[in-house]
Image (cartoon, rainbow, N blue to C red; front, top):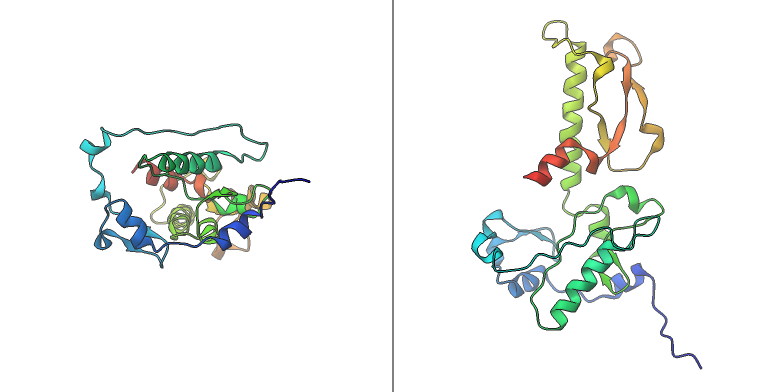
Length: 215
């Protein structure tokens, strides 16, 4: 008789998990409630002033990258979460730091990026879909700059004489939509701008995203 235990799907495991309030999670890290910028009961942002360089020098950073990836790229997040759980299990105080998932893979073959099985972060659906809204803000900032570029090309009085053929700044959206990778914009007459080739990148590929990461 088989003794193999049946494991549910990632979504089943995530929805069955009993989540602790984010205030309780913060207290385990000696972070006060007043330092939290709440996004509901289970998510919060932390201020940069909590970073203590003197304490950081006394601790270890473990970087998990490109570990046994499948063709779709799964594995790195799951291993990172599992490693952190294991370290805490043996009495070490460890915290996992992950990048925010993009919506692109969520609606593709890969699925989300919040881990898998019993090595995942919750609330999984919130984290994978909209989280704290940072990607939306990056998207708007990037596309505002795109609009400014096209407005300047259109302008007769304040033109910077940009060559439409040499503009490499693309618009972004957090979705894998191959039909928007290379497009023609500015059609529909003089009121809708100057026709030129353009396209969309996925939001995490935005230069604004790179600036945010470096910041």
